[in-house]
Length: 152
Length: 236
Image (cartoon, rainbow over all chains, first blue to last red; front, side, top):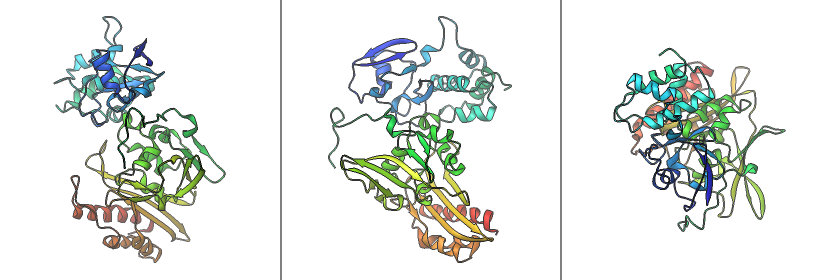
């Protein structure tokens, strides 16, 4: 058994140690907010936070999740109240097909926690590991800059 | 090599504290093999060019997980950090039940993704002795700024005394099966050829054609990145 904290709840899973964290999240725990894009660490669609740091869940064997605190996109909203980053994505229309959106939102959350009021350049760097195949980057960056307290 | 059984033959070393940590030593630094690129970026005592190198390894999701040791042992010819270890004359501390030994970076990569460690050895740390008198330089050329695999990656180290170069080290990645030094260019720099030393590039490298770039482009870019570095410090 592998045990970790998932969105604040203690969670145990029974999976072979090299099972990818993304498969455990989606298939076993039915948290399908975390998306698989490339499956090889390029696109960031599967971004989750492990102990506060953004990582690609497609690159993490579940054995390495033991004892960690994991946050997925499902853990951002409190009850029905969306996280300000999520609200900003809606206000700016910062989603087209939407597959990349959870990864962007979670990566932005990590930046917010690490550095309130980042510059636009810092936002761009923090989101550089997330690809949007619809190329809707301007609105995504506008939304994150605004949600994190800056002027888009 | 026998393909490992993912259920039985893999040991998880993530979180082994003895393998991580970046420490100052009497002569320089000991960088634990499990140090992530994020940790390298945060280790402000390290040479700025090495921190710059760490910042080009993927984006933050990769930098939070990818390690110095992983980059070295994976041994991809495009491994971003490999030329830096060559020009820094790094030593790799490897351990087994027989004890510990150090392998110089110059002897480590023996072929495409092959290295000088034997099967039961584990890379535990990298030792470097950067000199404050030296200019250390890193340049990665990829398809775009973020997250790309390099077409050409350069590490350079130059020591200048009384206006003349007295030590020159250049190493490149992504252009051959292993990262390589540029001995002809280095000798030309020491012989006083200045930035024109870069014109000897074709004697040192025969770049490969692959999915990411052509041989001609790589030779051209390799020459340009070395020339622009030399122009900056030795004049045009």
